[in-house]
Image 1 (cartoon, rainbow, N blue to C red):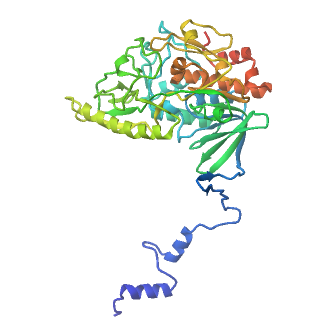
Image 2 (image 1 turned 30 degrees about the vertical axis):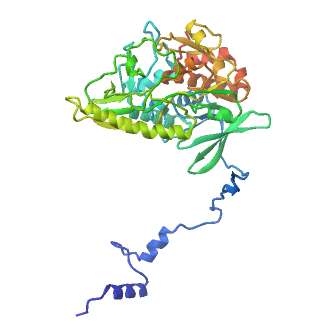
Length: 471
């Protein structure tokens, strides 16, 4: 009968026989470790050029940036404006690339949990925003728990963020659009004449470039046109954080279903005129919010305090304090009889940034113009009525920088006075400007022209064909 082996003797004999065996396996440990060690092959070494410290200065040496892709139309930002721009351009048969900083599409309409689709209607409750935005909503119509309160003006529709993420992913996969997620646009590529020729991105693949004939800046913050040297106005305003609450059956921010201020919930009630208003990190005081397509789940909008959306310190402070304040609100909500089982289902993964940069465009849309009902020969769409502002036309010139070539803007960073931009930043209006920018970019490719020289009559005809409302 063989004697029992000590652990040391077992290890000695195993190593002598060729190595230990991995637990639950007939493979020697030495072989397992070898397989876990990556093999470095010729040409696979990543060439980094690190920044260097020279005294008190950090210096980044000049380096080549590898070209990830070449395209005709590059859309930077996959939010409401960016997705609309990409789809409208692609349907014109041009090569389109869409790049988004987050791991999903939809921007504030999905990741920001801005679930109320407003303003859609004019003062007589007629819908004035159609086109690709209407197509999105029709896709949600046929999905269980995808959207509620459709065609019930003046109550606005409310969407489900996850359903809309699915719709956009599904559409992009079937569209032929080249798409990169988790990829942040950090710089513009400009030629010797000052014209934009693409953008530089940062991702887990490092710093890479995408070359393009036309770039559409849908970053929300105007990051690309600012990097290219286009003039802009920097503004600061309220920054909030939206959440969803579960096990809730009451609604206390209706009937407007889209108000950004619990004290101004009624549609048409006079607002502060669009100027930044005093807000606090937690100004809910136990509010329950508005209903969503998901049963017993509400979404709770937040105005928040004024902050600088281009200042990382401001953004960090608001991210942290808003999450603490949101939890405090849920605790207050649980104190109400019947709400003991309420829980915080989700806080938005991205802050509710409203405005930061506003383009200096060929045309700046003014507050006086929208209140006077101004009409524009280059109209590309409408905004619905919002708060105490009537519906109004949006001219193409608001999408075109005054000087820099080969770039268009769409979404919240177009050329408008602050009071107007506080409306054009909203989800369905971003669909409008995005669709127009996408078609204009496609026309630039097809007609070999600059954005400022686009045939506006042709652009308007194409918008009509894609279902847009121009009045």
